[in-house]
Every structure is written in C-alpha cells, then in structure tokens.
Length: 284
Ligand code: A3P
Image (cartoon, rainbow, N blue to C red):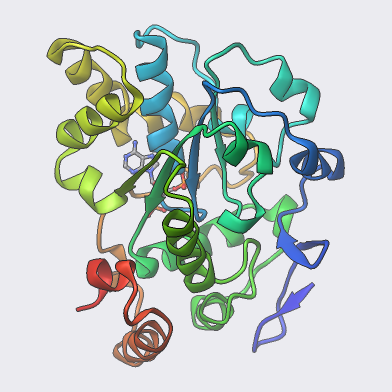
C-alpha cells in the first residue's frame, strides 16, 4: 500500500519489483510468455492518455467496419486478460497495454508487431489518474484529496509508476529499436485534428479506407458516442460518475492545479524531461 501525506492509502500490486494494478496474477505472468502474432497491433500508453479512444479507432480500422459489438478495450488489455483469452482473439488482434517499453514481451520485438504509442500532457494525465484512483474503489481503496494525490503522482508512487520514467523509457526504446514499426501520436494531436490523426493511423496500419469510412470512424469514436455506449456499460463505478469517459478535454488541469502546484510540476518536468522529445511537446 502507498500512503499519501494525509495518511490515505492506495493499493497497488508489487510484481517482480514493478507496481501494477491489482490484476489477475496469471494475466500479469502471461506477459512473460506472451506469444505475439505478426499482424498484432498494440496500442501502448501511460494510463489516462487516450488508450480507449485510440484502441477503438484501431479496432474499426482493422475490421474495415464500424459495425462491431460494443466491447471495452479491457477485453484486449494484455496484462489484464488471461493468456488463453488473448489467444482466443481473432487476427489481426488490436491489443493494448500500459507496460513500460523495456517490459514489453520480447516476442513483440522479435515479430516486429506494429506499435502505436500515445502520449498526453502529464498534467492532464495527473488529473485524469486522480479521478481514476478515487473512483475505482474496488482496485485502489483510495479516498485521498487532490493535493495529496498530486505528490504521489509527481513522485511516481502509483501503478505503472512515474510518468516521467515511463515516457523517457519509451523514447529510448523507440530510438534503440528502429526495426520496430512504431507510430507516435498524442491526445492533443487527436483532439486538434481527429480526422487527420485517424488518416495517419490508417496509413501506418496499411489499411485502405475511403474518406466516408474515416468520417464514420471519427463519429463512432467521439467522446459523446463512446461515453454513451461504452461508458453506459461501466460496471465498476458504484457512484455512476464516469471514469473512462470523464471529461475528454485538453487542459482540464487548469481547473485543478494551484499556481504553486503548477510551479512545482514545472520544476520536476524541467529536471526530468529536458532534452527529451516530450519536452518539446509539453514544456511551456
Ligand atoms: P479525462 O479523464 O481527462 O476525461 P485512457 O483511455 O488511456 O484511460 O484515457 C482516459 C482519458 O481519455 C479520459 O480523460 C477520458 O475521458 C478520455 N477519453 C476517452 N475516450 C475519449 C474519446 N473518445 N475522445 C476523447 N477523449 C476520450
């Protein structure tokens, strides 16, 4: 258990020295022996960066239709589903994970699966993750307040650990593995031009789609539609306030951060990220 400054505890699972959510052990262990397929597509992101959104886009693009059953991205989350369940998914599999680059199953590198890396402004991630941690009671049992959570996030004392370490690790991993086909996108890019971002994704995946289909996918993947269809199915939230489809905006952090927190965040960001590719995206 992690304890914040005010004494509230947040439950995480420690597995081989890494901090994860309290997912089935067999599913987590399955990551070590995961057998990739050449046509697997893996959406990778730190939690709360838009994984659901991008995974949904990939699902439609690979299927070539938006006429698919409403299912959650957790159905294809590598560290959450049991190996057999992943095995049962038909090819090409749109998968997703929040694992650090260096912890990715080796077979993904060996088979050179297509990887989509999604990043998001860490301040918006912090706010989104706070809501996640306080609302997903059955996983975290956390009822801390934002100022206390803020420190946990900054110091990486959450499941999947530090955003800064995660992001630098991905940058390094991508550089060290030029053979791995990786498409990089960001929550902000997709918000600014969803159609354009989707088109790039389609190109990366090598799927032939016309504009009408892409427009349809944009609509089906809108915050409103996903929230109304998938969000309505969220079963884990007893208070029934949305978690996975909460607000869907860029810059919500401004409604949460005090001036002092903003300065503190900038200090850490500067220290951790200077010289990195994410620094160019998110320094100000
Ligand atoms: P907020 O909490 O800021 O609203 P992830 O899927 O990686 O867990 O990311 C969740 C974040 O993406 C949440 O952010 C959620 O609202 C937002 N999100 C989910 N679906 C979205 C969509 N279709 N369009 C835009 N944002 C979306």
